[in-house]
Image (cartoon, rainbow, N blue to C red; front, top):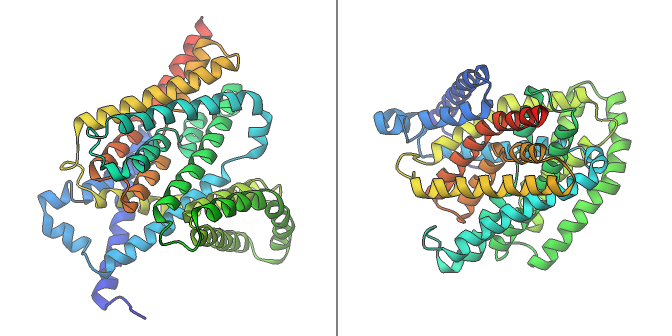
Length: 412
């Protein structure tokens, strides 16, 4: 079994230390100015990566992050981080809220998926040259961009609604429940896209993969939930807290992720659906949920988001026209879709616009999506940079514009 050399172990430990410290310090600066910590973590990676440090002091950059087994170990750690991030995203998806808001949320989520997906798909499909899309990947690329501009960032939206004291309001409940449906559908579609790319190397034909995927979702949200409700009380009675619930929930998350990876659907989908089933259990307390969140958000999440900046030179791969177009597609599709769905559901003009801007926050989910697409060869570095910038801009602007339209609604 291959192992890291003495020097590589030292390099890996120093890299982890620098990434965690930089991510936390810059993330805290952004928290103090009422911005998502994830923005600071990504900027920390850009400072430490080829964009800044690699340009100013390339020997320092290559010394900190050498291209050897250390890089392979770091890459493996980031893959685990993505799985855990999707797991806690699933924990935040509360099915009872979706059911309670089902009529209005269905209208909003349907329009906030269909319209941005249609725009995102049509642009590269009809103008492939502008996006530098090879003819043999035009369908996959178009499907990807449609999904990328359709998914909202549930963790970012939840944070915005908490900061604005809107989480328990009727508008907040509608935004959260609609975002939950968006995420569920969006990640399912994206997982199918990845399975189409990898079907040649998978264990099953794509038709069997889709059938097994649907079966997995139904099983986890029915029998799986029943078993979880039986197992958790035993864990709470028998094992020490919080170690028992933390270790077993993470272990089952990895098992679920391994299963969907085996059948040809990306591991993140298995983790996400397991998170939905576990988070919906009445025995999985808020305290337990908070412990899992703290574990992932303070260790794995910073390491993942800081390493984003290590993968691409943002200065060399920045394309202004492409970035502006991606921003335009994202803003128009999601805001028009969300607002139109809210209007159909019977809300006022200003409340509808508030919901549209509330759903426009992308953040972590789009970045994870973009990184997976980059690794799968669906997109290139310039599109990845454009998606990261889009995620940052929508995260920054969503909260203020949501508050503005709600204020306009109260004054008119």
